[in-house]
Amino acid sequence: MILGVISDTHGNHAFMTRAADRLFDEIGAELLIHLGDDYADAELLRLSGRAVKAAPGLWCPEYRRAGIARRLDERIGGLHVVAAHADKDLHPTDVDADIVLTGHTHRAALQRVGHALHVNPGHLKAAVDRRQPATFASIAIEDDHVEARIHGLDGTVLQRLRIDRGRLA
Image 1 (tube, helix red, strand yellow):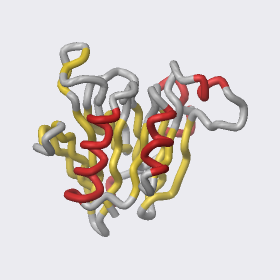
Image 2 (image 1 turned 90 degrees about the horizontal axis):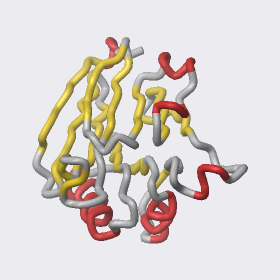
Image 3 (image 1 turned 90 degrees about the vertical axis):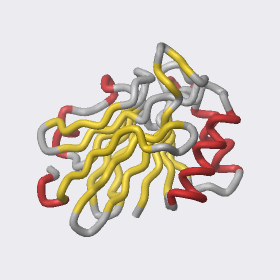
């Protein structure tokens, strides 16, 4: 199972579509999680027939709308995955998740926090924003390991972190 993760598209449909095309068509993603800013951008991807789940960003009107969850809590590839735009929307029990996905900072990061894999895919707002290049993430969930990657907009792998599945939460 390959999971694609994007965040902070901020209406840049050209970059968002380019990243989604790379994730689905080249990397083989089966599902894309959009971490907000802008929630409406995720709707455009859904309308194109892509498998997309989304959490609204802090600046989205949907963030304040009843009935739209600020946080996703899913089983994906047999793992417990939690996703939210910002850390502030995570629950204390999310430390028990296998994979935690957040955006908001526009800074791509892969790290171990406790037993969980934390992934921030960066942003797709512009070629460079807050002195950070446009990036997105892929997560390959295999039988024996999980490998997360940060990709530049051209698909180049910029960071990689592999963790044995038995070492996750």
